[in-house]
Length: 115
Length: 117
Image (cartoon, rainbow over all chains, first blue to last red; front, side, top):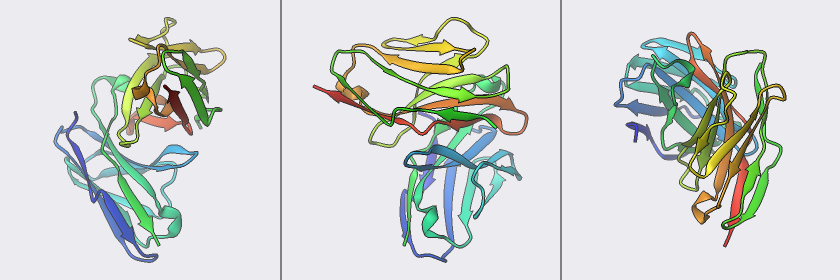
């Protein structure tokens, strides 16, 4: 299994509070991604990173920010959590060299509940 | 923008029987890849099978095979000799090469497969 961990694995928070989710990889892969999973929508891309300090927005980026100061860590921040951000969040990684054939490896997910 | 549609929210199959999950997609790209992912109750995302758009031959992985119809933009998954362990959510996904984003994935909404003993 690819070395990807997410922390925390579960979190309950209140509306308006800041939340940071962490993704840590030991594979030295270039690309890192944050997705959210909601019923009926599959996984939707929030933000991605193509290198240290290089990030860009995905399909559902409003209300989220990211940072990548080291190759191995990709942080997702909800500046002021809302109930609509209650979801399961997945981190994924992939490497370069194989082009679009490269498999994305997924972390175990974080279940976030915003009350 | 690319979209992926799975029209069957739920499917059921008898153990040892065959089931086919449907997926359609929309894209203007000519070079892309398609994937089926399995998500069991553990929530772990597991790659089941992948297909290169430029290959006419359908991909096969043991009991899993695909029917790829490029002109129709259809990519169905056939599971033969279904087993209880096949019960899971299945996601169809599309990928194309983006210079900055690597192999960016777009997912369908998923199909929940139940296997009856």
